[in-house]
Length: 112
Length: 116
Image 1: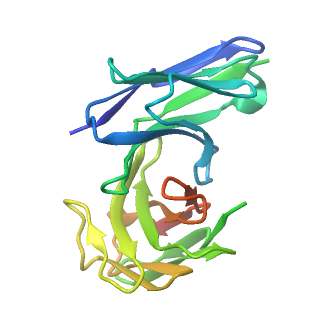
Image 2: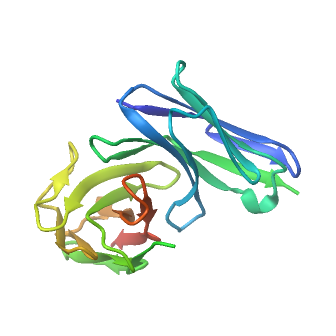
């Protein structure tokens, strides 16, 4: 059972554009929603995260929008740069289990 | 910030041999560590959870006898792939839960295992 569904699988954006990646979850016990960035051959690195009591969180060019009623959250990358080209994973964590469940990943390519 | 060191970064072994991967938390104590497996162009799949001083908890479908996990100290967890076969070839990543609070998870840089 895929508990966190992520889309799109791949995304191509022009430099300066906005990249948007969406995720949906099923388990209402999840209480922490991080986004990770992964470059080839490296482990994932935390980009930004949000708790369900907040509808939006912004850090620099990265923004998470969270819709608790719809059980959806999304990552917006403003002014996308070629250096942002990587694979992005949304994830969800249940404080009860301590397990981090990942979405399927989105490969982002930002064209110069 | 919190750093998790994972070694080796790349290993090639012969079929039938065992390989040990180390995951160390630097400058913080990791009460819980997690091991993930990632196939090319796929997501991270949780294999097991290890708590210092106790037996690891494995996810459904993960062979306990093939993937031995030891978390003997608050800074070190090891994953041993026993009697490795080509289908065990994958990218293995550890994660530590530590000083950032209950919701702080730091990942290692991963280990590329190739079994020939």
